[in-house]
Image (cartoon, rainbow, N blue to C red; front, side):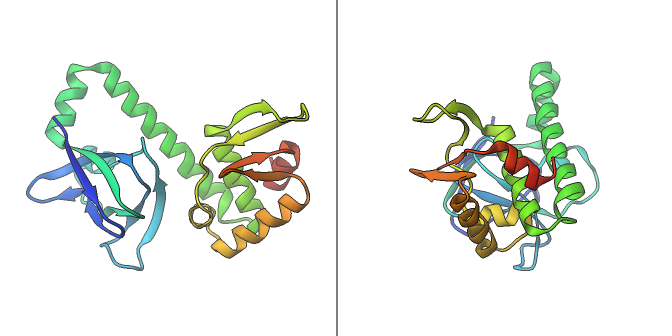
Length: 207
């Protein structure tokens, strides 16, 4: 029932397009940002999007207008479904409805964490909390070549995107990661990020 669409870098998708009305979009390939505003450069970042993330659920279930847009960070590919298609599917398939609710709950949890803990803290704690959340969601526990326990994050977000999530400048992210790498707390290997001292990271994060 859905349709595949593409956006080039800085392309915009309005999640409530007329005359089609609201739509649910699932990112299939690339990176994007969910923004609040009217598509101008001064819009507010709501959250970043990676393959598997979806956007548009607010527009689907809330009758009030919502100025959410998706802005592509590069070439992106996504699937889009109109409101009537999604509603018909969730009525016919309760498991789909439960999966959608689970995804919405995870997004809400991330938003609460960001609002409650990120913007009121200094830069090191902001970045440490961002990394801790990423490792909790996608981290892999393993042992390195020396037999020490560590955490692996494959294909981590770019430093620019980490800065967007943490609410700090990209240069600050680079400086902090470099300092923590010198201390031996983290390491970068072939594009992946490794935490060698999880306790120190959590101490900085305040958890």
